[in-house]
Length: 162
Image (cartoon, rainbow, N blue to C red):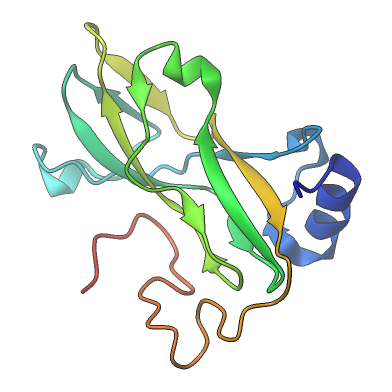
């Protein structure tokens, strides 16, 4: 079952997301914004912090949400790119799942599939987090001993960890 707006408001006000912005609550999701740190494999690493990033056709980058989220132990989340960005040929389809218990900023894998450069601005609403109630709590949640979690507590854009 997907969690509704009143649940999202309560979750946000009680520390589920920092910073919490009530106007980012939708009827069945919470909007997340992109931060100002980028990792692009075809660019100079010195250029990784900026208020905007021009993503050229075919180019990929890692970015992060501005928000730090805390997923409850009895909830899982699906991250979907805002539909406006999809209509501009920006893709985020490589990852987007948050297991129960996950805590941290969320790394985004973005690709420009369009014919024109796209300017991504820090602070822009980029994705929606959809909350789904679990039938029951897991035996081992993300970040707990034995979970094998690699990204618990991450902040900022994070490269792959093995």
